[in-house]
Length: 516
Image (spheres, rainbow, N blue to C red):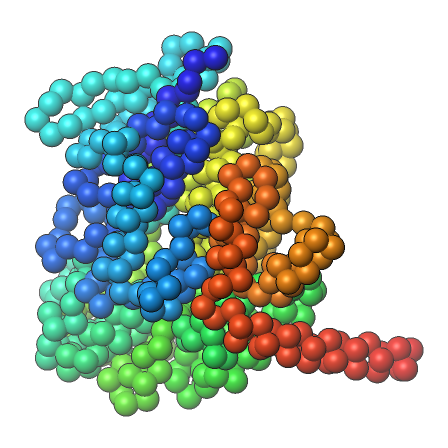
């Protein structure tokens, strides 16, 4: 059988790991990156770039921790801090590409103009890519499979405020924001309720005359460090997935409220934590308490130099409005009947495979939002996709796949009141891992390696968990899990939390039984 050539579109996080997964499976990857660097948005640039999707600001640090952010077989060096500046993250991804020899498969400054089925697609499953390098004519290449790795942050979304055309100040999307000092002495309104909005409002407030943060319905403020351990390490544990969702939601909400007084900050939302966006930020609370940032409701309209909010208040002499309002999901290089634009319309089986295709030779990697690091999730998707391309994993029939797509979309809409591409991190990863035979078996581990079984169930779900068994097993996976920096401390903490929870549940059950 001829070795299959796989086109990988984009050399960001998802693209890099897709190239490696192709290599691991004996496929031939050819990665096309329209920019002149690998690692996508993790390259910081002072200058603004036309047509750019998500971009970094100078003060950017990660919201996810070192041990949870890494790929499954390539941990960060032990001396790396728990949370990292963007320069350190970029260094990691460059090191990843160097260590696994990925550069030789990447064509920089090459834009994918169009992806379309080959003439004999229904028989071969092949695709034609139309490629454009600057100063050269468009050329075509034939591939046996395609991995779309352009992510969810492709097209910045700016709301169409009433009076937008009348406003004489500066209006920019957060992807154009770089530094706080650029707004020295100005009055600024930041729009948004999630991570970027909080970061930008806090950063600008150190230099501006006054900053206002405008939110439709408040937010839930979380801090990077939980109870002595990084937030994502505290929450992302399999044991919590064994609890009823209502119980876990109640506990999580009470913990968050015990750490931050949302009422006093003006951040209170009318929606529960599990049905609302969150803002991970360590500074915004202090900036609000000292008056540098003031909370406002949604914007009603703009005038020449002022902003009116839906609660009737008006801020005059506004110099700038910064919209941290997210991105539209688009795939400009492929027809909408193959991959539709927008979270409302896109149809992907387990967020990866278009279910209506005749041949499973096209996969979308990294078009998903999770309550934790995105890189390890993209890696599992890529491992699954390459196994499908090889014929080692089979997809179900179209009807079964469409049922999964419709059910997932309906459940998301019922929960959040809008369409999106979010998933629950551990259940989603476990399902993908099960498809490829890489999901760890707790009961088997309990008999053969009790310490590791404990770590898998009660400690953070480290990416290396999915290298313990199945294809792609890594001989250092156990060592990586057991030696994670926060492991010893968080093990005791998780045990005490579990025991306390069990006691509470026992008491509740006892009271209920007695009343019955």
